Image 1 (cartoon, rainbow, N blue to C red):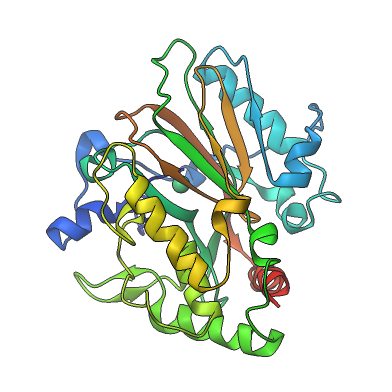
Image 2: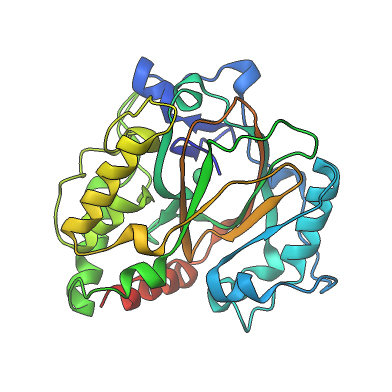
Length: 319
Ligand SMILES: [Fe+2]
């Protein structure tokens, strides 16, 4: 999980919006630099060496325990992703044979992100909602709390099943949901203004997806807002005010986010692995700088049909 809204640049550096917000320019601080790893050929080999816990297929996430080091966590993840059964994870099925480790970083790093106690529900690196340009698809994400590190009971990672959330209510008919989503991504997709306007046609903050599905534009101007600042930049260590703001936004859409989200306090040696397509995640409570190791898997160029399949799946949950 990257706790800002970040996207790749043509140089594979990750563009961090917490810096954009403050400086209105792309700003990469050397010691905080994070990069995408697609070019390093760390492809996941399909070997089926690991028994994937049922919870991953049923809930979209699972917590693994007793992992002694970052190296073991990475090895375990490569086996995990290489063993996912595409029949039980249909949205992942077409990408499994060409999935790469796309990111491996200690997080959080940016001061603006370290200082917040709240992160809104989001997709890591955003989800593409238009196939009009080549798009990366980030499919599996993992957060590892290194063994031997200081416990942090204050910080909890929040995870929610999109299906369970959206199945609570109908947000519209299939056709209108599709056109609303497409229009929102085309007109208000995540992006930046400087040095010149750019729309990635992706959405990271899930409340903006809800905004789109409802045919509203309440969050349309938040194209470059970091995840912790979508509702209120809650700098309180517990992040509760930000959380309440987010719950209230979802409540207005008749969605009870609190009822479906799980708050997980990762212990040293534990790793949360989640499906970045069927789940959204966030945080409540402040984390120490570089407290977690974040791994992200995906495909660098998703096909138009893969992007469309995801969009259709999402709409199906909201009908
Ligand atoms: Fe994240």
